[in-house]
Length: 335
Image 1: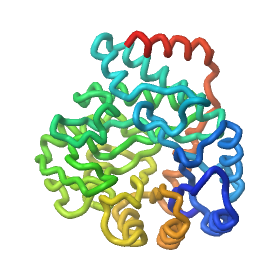
Image 2: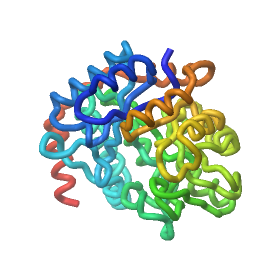
Image 3: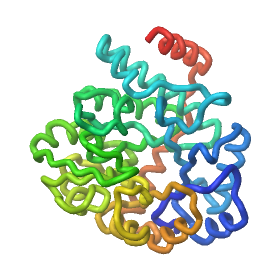
Image 4: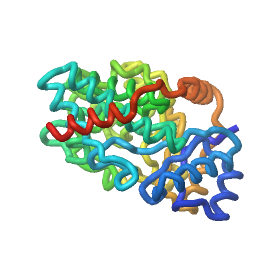
């Protein structure tokens, strides 16, 4: 049985030490970054080799949002706009905005599926506020929860039609954070009623999605000590009960500076709080070994949620890629 973690790797191909580690550790999935990307053929070979190490079609993830967060890019893959692009169109014409969001995601899914990548860490349902840190910024679809939820739903639909599973992030909301959780721990002191009517509200209509990712953010009105990733109160009361999310829940990158303690301590705390999987991204083998040693095999409800998520992988719905890309490129040029 797979262990309850997702791991990155160091470079464009696996080295002997990584191969030995992956065979022994048996992670549930993998995540790719720009350091792992060169040409389409190289990526396809790497994806196949990763899966060969664990002996099954393990999920391979990537952050392919568009804008500032795009691991695949020119010259081999097109540039995509940030999430705010869809929000701008939505404000002019709601139907056109949703169609653009779905169409852009469908094209991204086509890019990924051709490489064997079958999970995209998208959509964001974060609702930014004026005083928030710009780490979310133009990645967000808007500042109204109903608008964000609608566009995020269209993005998720486009990905799934293209054979790629979406990951809803960053639960239960990163938009109000006044710091970048890659660097330090954000603390949100907003009252619970406001959070439920704004930040959390964008996630609620998306609770049916198969995969979710937590935020390394403290919500002091709910748990003054632990960020969502390691807070049993937030995972249980907010993500599972209030939002109604029943999918497979992974941590954000466990090596980010927002979290305290050793990597094994962070990993155990995330799992104890109710995360099903620990995500570790930087590809440093010594850290990967620490995370693997701290994570158990995937079992119980977590294993059931993992199986349910993967059952939603589907063969891409046929569509005219070239016509869709021409239309989408014209839309970007006109914006």
